[in-house]
Length: 356
Ligand SMILES: Nc1nc2c(ncn2[C@@H]2O[C@H](COP(=O)(O)OP(=O)(O)OP(=O)(O)O)[C@@H](O)[C@H]2O)c(=O)[nH]1
Ligand SMILES: [Mg+2]
Image (cartoon, rainbow, N blue to C red; front, side):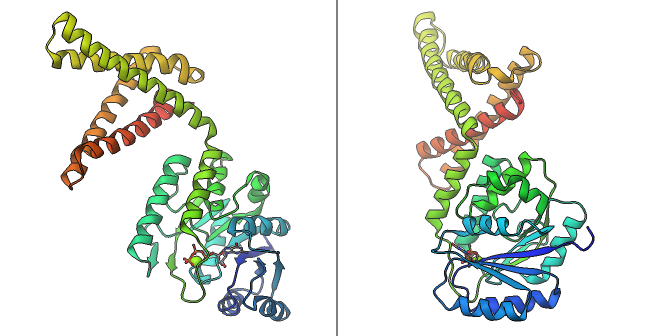
């Protein structure tokens, strides 16, 4: 990648206190980087500053009407940077240290398609974030890892470098308007077998200007995106739940029958009833839910399913014990356990028993 063209793409909204300094810092690293701002008609005098900056530095900018969201600004920016070889995306508020730009680009030069400036791999840090924000960010990351199966530690990081060939390939598929664009791109990257790597960065909390992120709105945006991308799996999950409900009926029915009509001790009936419900769940899932993924030997699938169910029962029990131990009502603890065990059971089914 000789003489490559590098764009530093920065969405901005009311960042007049940051952009001059930011341009200086980036230009000090290299005059070859073209800094491209996407502004959504900021109301704080940003336009004038951009005009001046573009006269003195390698800066260009686009001003759109009305604030339309971070993701929409990035998508717009990707359209405008089609002629570049590498696109680095970053925020204007100095949360992303410009000094890390060369490190990100270096990884692209080594052959990666996506490089993430990561807060959550060894050596990565977050400075000055309140505890609640740390917890929410961590939880969101685990949630995304689980549902989008990205296998990435920092899924929401906005500090990234992209090989532009990759962005051009997926651009038509990106639909996010808000911050969920970061996670959506990673999902598309994985689907397209892109080469992804994470390098550690130190993330600083903003000191100038105000945050544009609205927690609740972004959480809904993320959920909407996941539901859209996982439509097929959600259909499978609903079938899996229906099968599970039938299993509960069979479990209860046979427990009653074996105890009342056959005269077995209720614990022995209970053990038989559990196995019968596992069998019925397996048969129905094999015939219906996962009928398109029946690979390998029938008995092998059955054994795997049995093992998976044992594992989920243990997980259910751990939640029941653990949450009750810290003072939560045991019925609620059990309910949380059931939900987690169901999700885990579904995941094991789709990834292991009835692998695609
Ligand atoms: N063009 C455009 N830029 C946006 C929009 N929303 C956010 N930005 C910019 O995107 C970058 C990230 O937004 P931030 O407000 O820093 O979001 P955040 O980092 O989650 O929030 P803080 O940690 O509080 O800063 C900043 O450079 C913002 O100015 C938008 O709707 N349009
Ligand atoms: Mg920020």
